Amino acid sequence: MQGVTVEVLLTPSLYKRSLTRGMDLTLHDATDAAEVWQVYVKHIYLGYLNALDVAAYDGIKTKQRFTLVDFESWAAGEGKARFAELLAVLVEFKTGKTLDELTKEAESKKKEPEAASPRRFRSWSRGSHGVTG
Image (cartoon, rainbow, N blue to C red):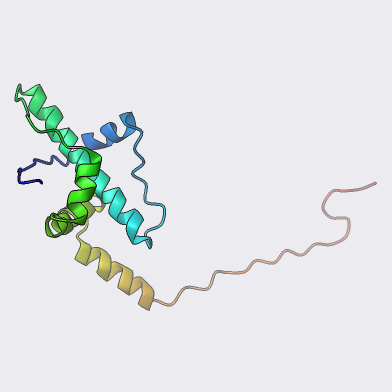
């Protein structure tokens, strides 16, 4: 990013960081490409902050500090290809499945006919359900 190699550490501890920063990582509409993009940029940014925390713990000082805006600009511009690679890694990190596996599952669900839900009808007879007067 900006000619600098940036480390990203993708571990479950990045979710703690999201809570302390008040960052919502919930994907509300998976069909909204902009929302999907933004959620995953936030994951990468939090992975960066996670790596900085570990480096600081180990006593390693970092000169360059990037912001979320830097990561959003990078993902939309110079880092598009690398972002796509990281997106695949993040999806597997979150779901335990590769993009290919998830795509195949989604396609097989589309092909399966939906099972008709059983309809239940109740027989209501006058006076059998309590209201008397």
